[in-house]
Image (cartoon, rainbow, N blue to C red; front, side, top):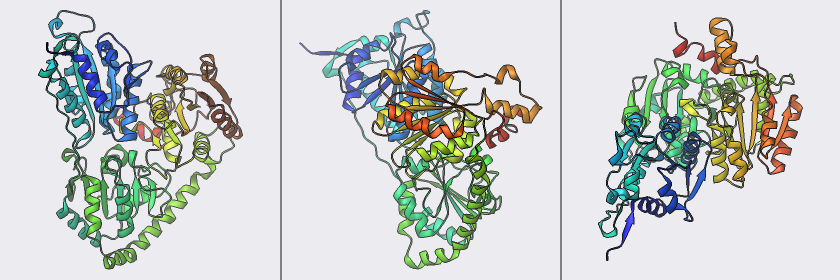
Length: 564
């Protein structure tokens, strides 16, 4: 008699054989069959208190490991709750596989429990949608999902299994199994030679390296490239830290609102080399760059090249492979010429960098009460080890202040919401980071608005023994929107932007964590020390100045919805 196997067992088997470590999930009836076969296996099911958190955790996993994070949700509301996390992964180019259950094929359009057209809803938000309607093909569909999520420009993939497909037994010998691993790092050697020629003609070049440099693991090649060419480097998003901020040619974050020489460099440069980074709001859609500058853009995704700016040298390539090709074209004579040529430009930027940093020292060192949020950010930056610790930022203004402050010497040690700008990522990101790095200290700095979205993930961290420390920059409300309204219309609309004083630290204490309340800047460091020493999930509720306006709030005044 031929042995049979159910569809759910095939899904579980495929995940186990792919050596998936953890599936982030919130249980539900339409995915219970998969739960049944994962129970007791090498794949851990990590239960969250909201599907949004499950997907954000999977996104953080993908960001930190460069391998697809996996989330699993039930049908209907479980599926719709996951959508924000999927959109975030799409905008951050993060490999992710979202597995969802759904109503059985025989019950479609019968008004069954939690029935809805899930594939049609999510299709614009992912690289690919896969709905498996035949049990024998489950392994093939799982393989396609993982291949697609990780190949080319990484991103989220949607994989749907109707409940009857999961429950149907099929003959084992009828199962088609496909397991394919793709490694792709195409490099355009012709374009590499053209770039070297452009560098030789330039007087004030700038290199910007983004998530593509991190995803392709191009750190060593990028460091060699800037050292051989003597060109200044800025990094962005997941690319932060691929070359240390301490390197004499690295001028830290690429976002122009960060203290440093970014703005000066962009308006004076005559050659901009963008490596795996989008020309987006961070650069005022390309308008911040000298309009006369030559533009080079290297990206593995063809459609990304030329967004918002005409590109003089478009290069469809893996960043690591392309830089390797460029480095091979360099020689000692050319290196000496470029060093002599660009040294005055680097020195000019170094001076501008220091002068800009000096302007912010008074805020970083402020003794004011309520506490200046930049002082809070600096205390965290100095307390958290650059090599081993992980800092996560969430919230509108709060993420801006931390992004203006955090020094990056190693990649994969800082997380925030990136281009999509979704609040609520903080606690899921921090929990995922702690799972991946159990021996590292993990600190989340978040706003008092953003902490409310997924507040019950404090309970998840306590239950799962993930001793993270959460610092709340409490400015009594939705600060970024409040300040942008004040700048735009002359006053803040209190009904929508004021929260008031909430004892978040006491709420965390009530569910088993440890809480701290801080009003004086000199008490921040002692609170951090005691919190991490406790080995508990901690909440440090810090009262920050509600009147400080971040550069991002000022920019928001003139963006999108605020235009007349």
